[in-house]
Image 1 (cartoon, rainbow, N blue to C red):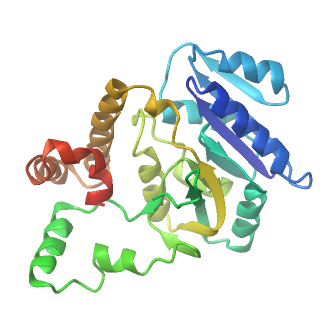
Image 2: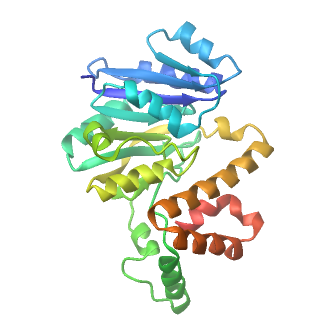
Image 3: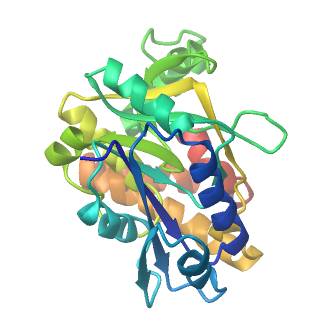
Length: 288
């Protein structure tokens, strides 16, 4: 069995994908046995042809249409053979042997089912890439009352996150799927990504299902990967607006799946009346 199966879903990110693949091949040590699978979701920019021509060692799966992030990843998961699987966005780039470092951490921490690295902007600043699970309306109300009374619950959302040192390795609730590694044993227990999530919240759902099975999810602040955040979601203002709506709908889907329809309905009302339309762009970082 190979050490690592790297999975990259692509949709019209020719240059980013090429740089991503080059960085993996350049920086991953020869002692780490790995494979790369690219799933192309109906790109029209020639990126699939570029992979076939310049990276013949990469397994290429071509879809005629955009099947979504979760379903495309699942296509590659089905044919993967590694002890660990890494979901990597096409707009990420390795500057060192981050994959081997992630594998070594997981080998040393058998209770860890999922891990992810620190994600960096082009200027080296840190991106927000981990969080607590979405709060139920009751938890939101509890924390809000605590803010008003200036008496926060010991296990409140604010207090838990205030203790995080992002230069260290620590347990979190979930990580975003831009650079996410999962243990094969964990995958066997919780199953593949839920492809009812077309895009967004499938990473929250995966980490939540791992949590329910007793696995820990680690943020690795000692390992970093560049995430340029210039991928498929930044094609146009119109597309960005559509994706903001998709983010909210995916989060509501998570609520319905794990917290029930009543909590989902309450949450929908909460975001409708708590935040004005102009603030909803940063909604996800405000409500978790």
